[in-house]
Image 1 (tube, rainbow, N blue to C red):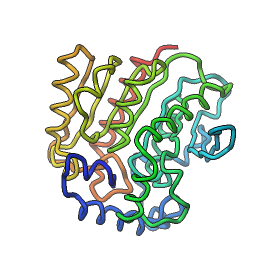
Image 2 (tube, helix red, strand yellow; image 1 turned 90 degrees about the horizontal axis):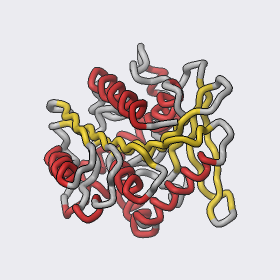
Image 3 (cartoon, rainbow, N blue to C red; image 1 turned 45 degrees about the vertical axis):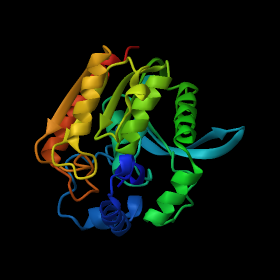
Length: 281
């Protein structure tokens, strides 16, 4: 779960975060045996598709290889439009690499910059660990990390110099919206149940926006997305919002207890259609 978004505007969600943290520890991230114990893998999992390649990459900050990320792209030679993937939790939770892989399967290059890189590997997903991370690595620091990821993508020979998109989840959804407002190279933003935004933060956001939110979300009430939609429409920003009846936070993520396969497939098809429409070569 996303520590910062759950405490946004003073909301007391610590128990919710703790529950999510325990779930993630139990799952064990990318090396989790849970998937192997299931009779059938989640229908939205595509990491094993033979037409794509994916794995960890490292890029530079202040001239040193200090920030890692997860990149996926089609195996076939060629150049492909790029999409940044902004996690609301550590990028080793498997649905984040899977999101990058799903983008590659659709003909994009997907990169999840590790905006959690100050957290040492193996640190438990506890409130105290997240609080220390938030205190020591500000939102502006994370936006810088995202820009470094975008710059890394631009330098790759397999990345098309045309449009670039950004997808974010939870607090990563908020970061995706902020990055879309800051960066001139972003042409489309997709946010899943984003953490709350202030009106002044949205003024420079002019590119098309798509938002997905469950009406049963216990971490970020879907009414926040309705407020976001109203503000964006009021300033002339193209926006479309999809609400998913009674679904809770993280319904796209098969690593989460509230995963809803049918809604996840529908939301993803809408995401790909949106990106294909607005990212131009």
